Length: 112
Ligand SMILES: [Cu+2]
Image (cartoon, rainbow, N blue to C red; front, side, top):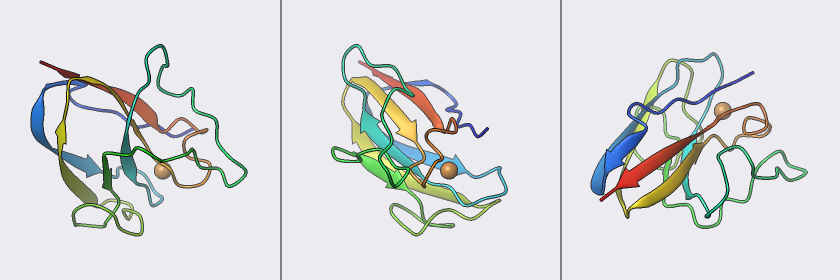
């Protein structure tokens, strides 16, 4: 069982820096995907490689002690990304193999 928690889970529209702290014992990452209407976080289907399709990602924090895309954030380390989000529902998730299916997803709502 793995999890991903957003604090806060609702943020105002505009530019935001997502700071991700890996409090676990394995490398992790966070990507930001728009959540389609009627779909809840956790409902994406993982492929044979244990990942969900990441097309449409609007941000990624997976660099150990750095910004944006990297090789995965080491245990105990932080990563961050600065993105400009339109109003809507988003899903934050870890797309390392098997992590999404194990529970590493959460909803982030952006309000006007
Ligand atoms: Cu993970």
